[in-house]
Image (cartoon, rainbow, N blue to C red; front, top):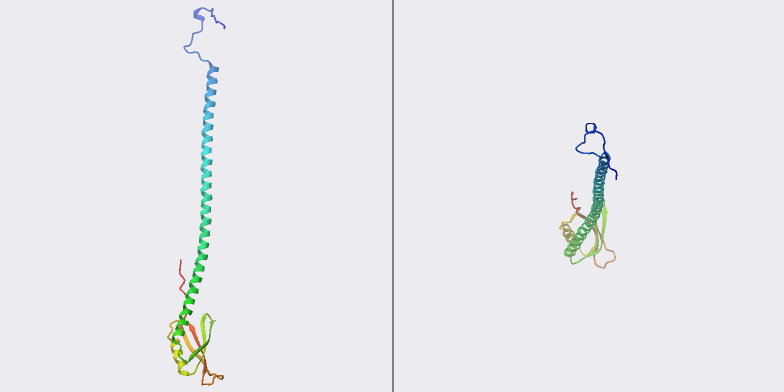
Length: 193
């Protein structure tokens, strides 16, 4: 350790400052404080960047989830359309089956005693369903009664007697007949969505 001795007279001696400033020390402290400030700022920016990345990942996850929901919604809509189409087909088949069943029940109910049915054919002519009824009877009155009964069925729009011919193979007088009955249009009105 060195001791500094000033041998100059007092008037020539430099005046002492109240505080002695060590510039190297201050510079070192300034650099340390600056480094700590920059380090803190760096960690703050890094934390903000981490938050932004987490927020970005969250929204990407939300976007993927929404895309999944949209795809699921489209799939459900397509399935619903297919189901509605099948339900409409089933309704149409049930309606047509009910009409045919009601027609057969009505025919059975109005069938006179001396009249027999040999064949009932269904055909579609220009979008109109037509039933061709072939039968045989021992009297024209029974055929006339049967024709009048068919006209009373509300599902038939037009009932016509196509032909009456004598049955050649019968011992008694017998007649073969053909009746055509057009089914009234029963297409359901399309529902608007």
